[in-house]
Structures are given as C-alpha cells and as structure tokens.
Amino acid sequence: MSEPKVTLNNNKTIPLLGFGTWKAEPNVVEEAVKTAVKTGYRHIDCAEVYANQAEVGAAFKYIFDNKVVAREELFITSKLYNTCHEKDKVLLHCKKTLKDLNLEYLDLYLIHWPIAFEYTGDSMEDPVGEDGQIKFIPVPIRETWEEMEKLVGLGLVKSIGVSNFNVQALQDLLSYAKIKPVANQVELHPYLPQANLKSYCDKKGIHLTAYSPLGSGAFVNDPIVGEIASTYKKSIPNILCRWAIQKGFSVIPKSSTPARIQDNFNILDFTITDSDMTKLDALSSTKKLRTCDPTYFWGISIFD
Ligand SMILES: NC(=O)C1=CN([C@@H]2O[C@H](COP(=O)(O)OP(=O)(O)OC[C@H]3O[C@@H](n4cnc5c(N)ncnc54)[C@H](OP(=O)(O)O)[C@@H]3O)[C@@H](O)[C@H]2O)C=CC1
Ligand SMILES: O=C1CO[C@H](CO)[C@@H](O)[C@@H]1O
Figure 1 (tube, rainbow, N blue to C red):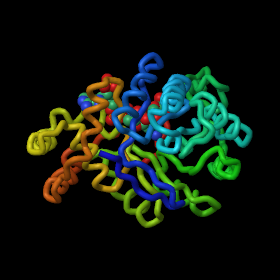
Figure 2: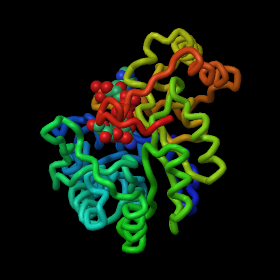
Figure 3: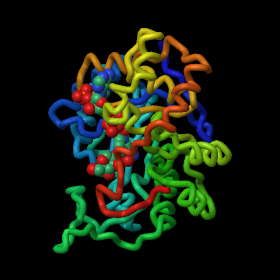
C-alpha cells in the first residue's frame, strides 16, 4: 500500500509515515534504514546530533545504487544542531550533513531547537563549562533562519522548518521570515497532544510532525489503548501512529528491530472510528508525559 502524503505550504508533499533514527546505533542503523525503505517507508528522519548520519548515508547509497527506490521517491529530513546556529556555521553543517548522508539535497532541513550553544565543531557534543552548566550563546533565531533561507536558494534543501518551537517562537519567526517554515517537529502523542500548537499551526499553514510518537513505551499498560488495539487486531504502536496520521500529523516512529520496523508500517489498511479517536483524544486528561525535556537535558525551560 502506498504512503499517504500531505501538501506543505510551499506545495511540496511530505509522506505521513516516516522512520526515526535517533538512538539507532551506528552499527545497526544502516540495515534498519534499508529494511525501512524495503518495507515501504518513504520519509526518513535524521539529525547531525544523532551521530549516525554516515551510516544512514551508506544505506542511502545502497538504496539508490541498487535502484531500491529513486532519490525523488524519498523524503529525507535532517536538523541543524544547537551548536551550529551562528551565521558562519549553517552552510558548513548543511554541507557536512549532505556529505555524510551521500545526498545532493535534503527535502527538509530543520532548526533542531530554538536555543543556541557554543560551537563544538563536528563532535556535536554539548559544550559544558567547568561549573557543569551548558554554554548558551545569544544567537537570535533570525540570524540562523536567514542562513537557512539561503540554503533553499542554493538548492541544497527543498524546504526549511523548525523543531521544538512553541507558539511564541513561531510567532516571532513568522514576523520576519521571508520563507515560512513548512513544518514544526515536536513531541506529540496522546499524552502530549499539543492542542494549542496544533490550532496555531493549522491557522498558519505549518505542518506538524510527531516525534517520539510511541512515548518511550509509556502506553504499553494503558487499558484504553490496549482495548482499542485488540478491537482492530493491531499493535499499540499501530494505534498511536494511526491516531497521529488521522489527525493530519506526520509521524516518525523509530525501531532498530526488523519485525517492529515492519509492524509499525501496518497502519495504512485500517481507520480508527470517530468514537475511538475521541477516546484516544481524552487520554491526556488522565496522564501527561514529555519524554524530551530540555529542562532535564540542559536546565532550560522553553515549553509552556
Ligand atoms: N526533533 C527532536 O527534537 C526529536 C526528534 N526525534 C525523532 O523522532 C524519532 C522517534 O522518536 P523516539 O524518541 O526515537 O521514540 P519512539 O516513540 O519512536 O520510540 C522508539 C522506541 O520504541 C521501541 N519500539 C519501536 N517500535 C516498537 C514496536 N512496534 N513495539 C515495541 N517497541 C517498539 C524502539 O525499540 P527498538 O529500536 O529496540 O525496536 C525504541 O526503543 C526519533 O528516532 C527521531 O528521529 C525524537 C526525539 C526528539
Ligand atoms: O532529537 C533529539 C534527540 O535527543 C537529543 C538529546 O540528546 C535532543 O537534542 C533531540 O531533541
């Protein structure tokens, strides 16, 4: 079954079911990406900070050399890390990402977080001072965004967007952006449904991509999701990802396990009824969860 897609605000399309690569160890990610593409995924989510782009790039080389699919059939995203926000780092690290991924262009390049750290070169390590605190630097998002816009002009990226931006950060960006962000990639699942952000992004034509859609396994003991999964004879991850795509989000579950990579693709042959969608929508009133918390990572609070 072919992948459903939605149209972005620049008229390009994004496949709704993607494949995540964070924490996919360098020695397994190459096989995982090959398995994903052979299974049918057409959207692959990468980032320089995941420290595995060269191995993901080896998979892309295999895929294109062996005509598993053509380059135009894949939608490939990567992200500019917090250490690379300064004016002179954006082009440099976009080119580094393209070289590692063995690509001539990215479909989508995102500012990974709306916060800037001191530069640590290609290591992608977070800069930590002697006091144990992260070394933040005051680079305005505007400076970084203007460089991101130039990448579109250079043909290195088809679309640009952001990740982990709240409504306020998007409002600021839209006040000066010459090229509107096509997408905002954020943590999103029934325990963190991002209702305010969704309503703002819908109004502004910004697509939302749901990261950590499985909530780090937090739903395995949820009786409502479990019951819905048995009704449809699907797995809990299937229900979570299907819920996301029925709400119009793209979704990027990660797995390094071949059977799970294949299982997670099995969401295109069924529809969750409105009444079951309502039950899933109601879960955030029973439990709230944020697995990727910058307060915990770096001691900075950026979400509402
Ligand atoms: N923009 C950002 O700041 C962020 C982006 N992301 C992106 O989103 C992607 C997905 O998010 P991530 O945080 O990885 O978490 P996910 O919600 O995708 O969960 C991944 C975990 O679930 C396990 N898993 C996957 N499928 C199944 C299954 N069918 N049954 C049981 N367990 C399963 C995986 O194990 P195993 O691999 O062992 O099978 C892994 O431990 C990332 O890989 C990354 O690409 C993530 C976080 C932040
Ligand atoms: O995508 C991500 C995965 O983890 C990183 C932390 O180590 C985050 O920076 C980021 O959000």
